[in-house]
Length: 337
Image (cartoon, rainbow, N blue to C red; front, side, top):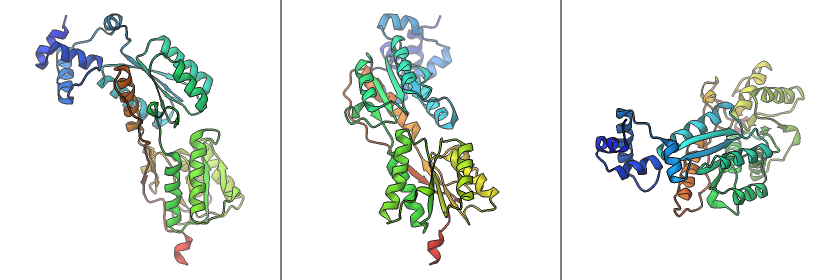
């Protein structure tokens, strides 16, 4: 049976260094970490996590609660989370919060019962008060993704949703669009509210009147994007650009525009959000907002590991979006004036 000593000899490092790599503790250079993993692979070494857990009174695992397993967004998040947990020598245990505060809380409690070293919670619906109560009640470090917590800035990783939506709509206005429609993300979520507020702030900045007829409340699916865009067109709502608060709804809207005999971007410019893989393959390519979910989950796990190791932590600056400009936006009617 291959032992930790065998791995240390193959990697040319001490047994203590191998232990630090496997446990994700202490300072280890990236090149040294890679040497250890390479030696483990060459020797087909499989660490006995159960024995280590009993000896260290730790599960050597990171728990992750996500809102849903659907879609590219959470697929990207899970892939990066698994990779980052491995780098710290931890196993990743993932469970679904089923998009309800009650199920999210139960999922956290289940992971706590399994003695995960730390837990990451991606929540859409839980109130700030409930989150803070849960942080206090959870015996291990709990890091929150997708929510800004004013009373726990060092335990939250969040994205500037409102600012990113503002940038997207502001860009459309600088392209001489003044009649801009919006299909929102689920409006009962903080994300939905923030993106709609970004849309409103951009209009306000440029002195454009808010028109309720130009706003439809979506659910982030292609089907609803299609139905709501079709509804606006049938109602005779005048708009030269459409801001859809996620790419799936933008893709659905594109079909409604095409079926109405209109062209993108010649008749209607289209802007999405999230930079889904499908955005670049739409014809024409969809302008959208890139959301750095990979960096966010990496940061969340790194922060959790610091807490597990009793290291000093600081508040995490908010993540920001990047406009990805493709061919779905053209100059608006105002450019001809």
